[in-house]
Image 1 (cartoon, rainbow, N blue to C red):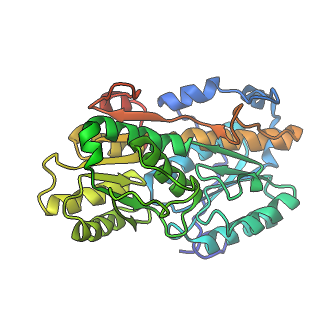
Image 2: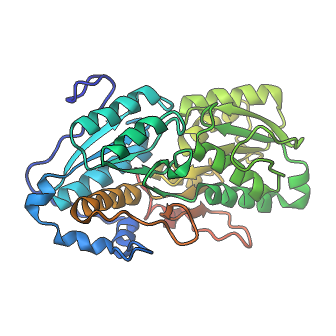
Length: 373
């Protein structure tokens, strides 16, 4: 597909030139209204003081991994809505598939040439994109990683993200608590990760789950170095339903007695469930856990397809990112990380209808009031 930018593979969101009134009911937007920048003391509320003339000169670009995952759709909606509210120009780009670094590189270069004040990016290849990100920063562009930190994390000016290790740890603790000590000892675990190159978000969720479940992790920044006999294996689903189905089919051939399935996200979990159902393992004998908190995923918790999922808040990440770029264009101030962390933590909530003692959670009914997509 060729977007208005003329660069193949990009999807360019239209710039709205007339006022657009949106009423946001999601609790995450209520949370957004109360959040303030820490450390530097830069309040988000200061954005109300941006004059319309200066705002019109501010271009914010959003680059997501793909444009068909509901997570990135909601992220784009949040960024567009905040850009409309502040009166700044907004352009959105996306890779053709998860892992498409070349398209993301071209998008960054396109935005540099267009004079963007800031770039928000969910990097597909967290290492390979870094030299291009450096070019943008050298050109005076504020770069904020959303959801997926760059490698190293300080290659961006800031990162707005879920604590992905914590997200994995919560579902690992839930799975362990559900099985009990004897079940944990005898578990057979399938891992449906994202990509073979292990981008940061992929590794952190995977390793967080292992820690929560009680698996001895070696290097917390990577997986595949574990020697725990309970691990059946890893497959790469590219964050998609068809990849989850194929990966689950492959692992079931290797380990027919799988009873725990970790998935990188909810589309992957949905595909895994279809593979389990095809062999009669949709009878409650297999625990499926995931991360995202999209409405389809929360409905799958309600239906018993997913046992527990860690909810994150993509709309919040993107809206905060647009505000940060607008503030930077106005005052030169950059956002600060959450105290004690090297990123700005946008929160995570475990959603399950089968709570476990000692693991904080909310029900699917509560989750459906906060979900996205």
